[in-house]
Image 1 (spheres, rainbow over the protein chains, first blue to last red):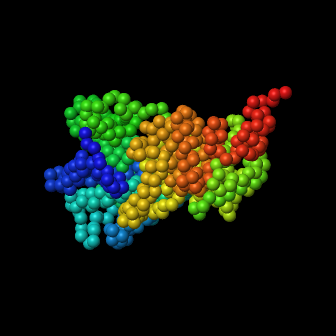
Image 2: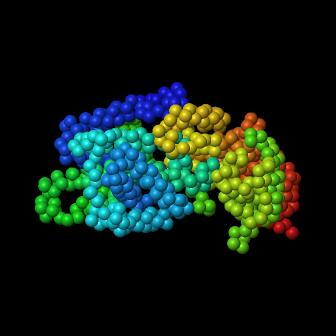
Image 3: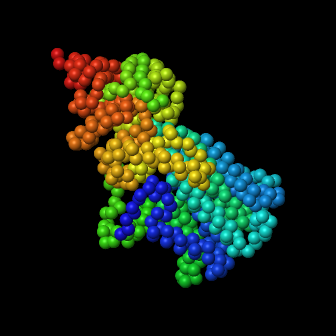
Length: 358
Length: 257
């Protein structure tokens, strides 16, 4: 067992305080940095896509996992990011400027949605965000002069500071740098007052309000931050897709994002990353399986959605904490060996919360 | 801002549909005193608290704290006027640690900017540590050190009550509204509460208004007591006076004729 002796308040602020964490994160970062040296282009491309989905997942996690505001239309921010970035690039705006503008546009639209959603709860919020998603998808389709409509829009090739980054490994490093920045930034957010106010709103709006948190404004902020991060992911996604069509950013994509954070583990940044891994690895694993399985099963249409559905059901039934929750338990098992018991993580009954002043 | 003020409630009323939950109630709470509100269930005690903390909009009446007209403030600004509170049914941030909860308690004194927070600029770090020091003072006062890194969901009921009290104190209020601080606590914990309330009053100079059913605790810590029933004021006075009041006895025990 490892004991942490804290001697300064800064110890509680520091990231990666435990030795084990340092080693694990170090290994992952080194793996990611070195990946282009030993991975084939196809797998490298998939890894880049995984990072993009991790960013999108963190975006949705900030809103749904940390602030407690469910969104069934988050793929529309992915779309807003992708379209804004592509359109700006096609007008000759430099990559970095375009990325920043995309961030701002997504944040502004997110805050506008947050403004109207800030007084909604539960089902109403779910329906409102779903409607928003459908609306935005329709706009992509109908605003043909700008978005190319249902014919689609070709994404200009990736150029940073005038250098063309056409190779897969070059694009991969762009994804990696931004993904690391977002993970770090999101983690920062949750060790500072802004993130705490998000979590406060999720757990009890009533007492958050009485402690001086402007609940409506915090929700607007959360929508803004979430949309900005997801929009950024959309901009990167555009370079992977190379061709944008409205139906890519439909309800199914929104559900995929939601599935990602639920399977990964709600309320943690690591959960979003785990979810992205599941989403990205599953299709690859399936394509392997298809070759092995007898054709009558392997070639059946719809086996992928079936498996996705099955996984989400199994996770919700057996591990509501998602993969992150399971990961915690495994870590706890080894860190406290041999003291782990079946009931180590059993929750006691939670006390009734007042429903009076919703 | 840091000196307690007089809380003046005048002709306060609120109507829910046809129910007069609070009707024409007036009282003053002097700076530095401990003021208890008692009454049978449904008398309107918590409603008065919710009116003071601006969660409800009164149908009539005024609430003045020092020079500040509280009715001018939205609910999230009340704490800036120096009024903190706890809840009857414990409203903590369940999935967060005790420390995290207490830091949210410092919220009224914190500046927030998502951008600088995202980058965790040096100023943010400095502020975090400064606020942490304030939080540690409260942790010392209420002896919460063993629980500092526990999640609320893992805490016992009694510990949660203390954390909620601590969180309210982290906002450095000059007036503290305590909604049944001793409900659900055993005798030992209730004793602790009564000592802490004395400490809070004397060391921090905080005015306390509390709703409480435990008459022993009320007799021990309260300077004055207000009894209400069905939204109407029955009596205000010292604990003994109110206990002797025939109206109050009738409200609690029924008519003895």
